[in-house]
Amino acid sequence: MKNNSFTVAVLGAGNIGSAVIERLLNVDNGVINLNLSKVLVSDLSKDRNLDSGLLTTDFNEILNDEKIDLVIEVLGGVDPGKDYIKALLENGKSVITANKDIIADCGSELIETAQENNVCLYFEAAVAAGIPVLKPLIESLRGEELTRVAGIINGTSNYILTSMEEGSTYEDALQQAQDLGYAEPDPTNDVEGIDAKFKAMILSLLCFGVSPSAEDVFTEGISNITKEDFDWAKRLNKTIKLVAQIDNSNDGFNARVYPVLVDNKHPLAAIRGALNAVLVEGENINQLVFSGPGAGSAPTASAIIGDVLSACHQMVTSQTNWYPLRTPKSGNKEFKDVQSSWFIRLSVKDEPGVLATIAGLFGENNVSIESVIQEGRGDNAELVLVTHEAEEDNLNSSIESISNLSSVSSVTSTIRVYI
Ligand code: HSE
Image 1 (cartoon, rainbow, N blue to C red):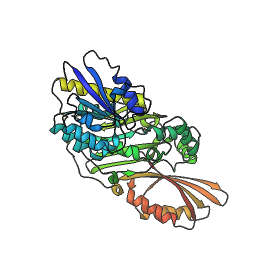
Image 2: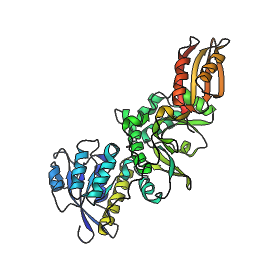
Image 3: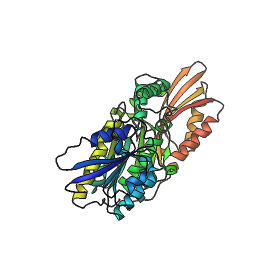
Image 4: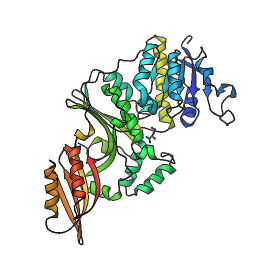
């Protein structure tokens, strides 16, 4: 750093990397000057519309260059980015990353390494990309004891669910998401809730000081949701969203990702297409909702450039330390003990005593039924039930017993209701 001028390197020149480089070359905020000195790529021969003198395939050229103040990591995946970030921080360089996999995996360790070495580590783009939500959670809401964070934090799955709400089948909606470039050719991470799980792990760390492991976060995706589920949701004045929900009440901390029926009047129901939203609750703030574009190269680059400028401003004044992470307030609550309300569709024989037997099995498992709709389909009937809140364990036991009844042809859907 010299006279507010900073030397910057970028690891990766894919979609996000290219958008970041373009922004870096054009940043003019009147105070900070950014000079791009190196870009790490895997293939020098690829045409990149960049001065070839900037390109290198050797990470050590960046690590050992004393002129480089700050490095932007946009490689994707955990390896080798994780080792690179650690080495850079230990070598006195600030790091900005969009890499949710790495921060979910070892965020608190890397934050500690940054603090020990008096450098910055920021990752606003790792959760909900263009929505500036991490900084408010770390700084502006520092005085607030948060009780819940719930988010639609995967744009691809929200795009698919919105299309299904409008009448598409899951398969058609996924194809549209792929055609528009939201979903990868292998969409597993997005549609099975894995991407949202990593983001929920980061939110858990920043909002509650808890680092749950990937196994601790119950995760269910959207690939089993059908058009018929949406038809029923509509009849109940609800829609279906993939929600990451993190609760931290007196009886424990739990983070989970699953599709839920959301009341049409709830703010999360209004988040449509590829947009994201993060809803935050605390005693004094009641409820805040941050919403906007949560994916795509331009919003992601915007969050990265914001982090770069924050880090540079901090370096100018030698204030590179993070706020200390929050201290966990309560123990962990296992998912089996979480209270949920379930929407359940059953295909049953339409004959005397069936409804009473099913109601009896719920009762035996301490599950109370809130509402029932039955529709005849010849000799069979479709039975749609919504339960009151009950422990996950009890709900699962009820469904297991009910699915073994000879009068029940199938348990067609079980979807939780957002409470
Ligand atoms: N694939 C993610 C999404 C964006 O669809 O939201 C990157 O995290």
